[in-house]
Length: 274
Ligand SMILES: [Zn+2]
Image (cartoon, rainbow, N blue to C red; front, side, top):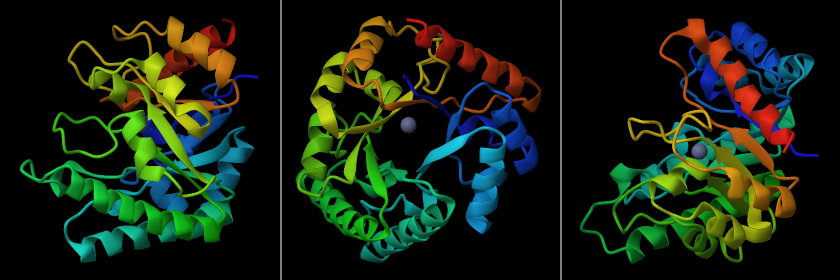
């Protein structure tokens, strides 16, 4: 059985009740909570059990959550900022346990933390040190970490390919794996089929989206130029149980959220029938 999810980022600009209703009516049965600047995730932060319960009542399991922006400093040169990032994750680990969410997507760096002139070894070492600390804490909380590839052009950004991500998480335990973000890998010019093969059993989850005509990411699959066929064939054969979260940005107007959700669900339905 292929499993599909929808990232709650698409309903970022709705108040929580409307966000839950829109997701519930979408045709998806799983969601990844995302967009901590939106009211739904903020409501979850205050009441993890309550919001997960509302989503469940609307027909949606919440298997994963996106890392909070407060946790984006894992690669910072400033030790205090790194500490604050661990603490932000810790708060989420505790809330995840209470809401029954098993996995969190981890961003190992953010662009402003890495100077262009830094040698790659330095940010890589900071990322590895931070991930080791997070992995130990996650193990104690019983949650899984899915470390995501991010888009970026500078050669010193750590973990931009599956090979590099595997180096970052080596030896951290079976509760630490990868989230392969298809759009980010595509923007980097990588062969997605090859990346999927290399991820192997460490693949915990997928963020699936397309690159639009403007060159930006997080469009509905099919709205960009990527040919999904070979990637889906490999997914179906080797990673049939991995949740495929469609991660699409919120539209400019709330009036078309339902239409965007229907379009994303139509992609899911077509892929299920393959
Ligand atoms: Zn992503």
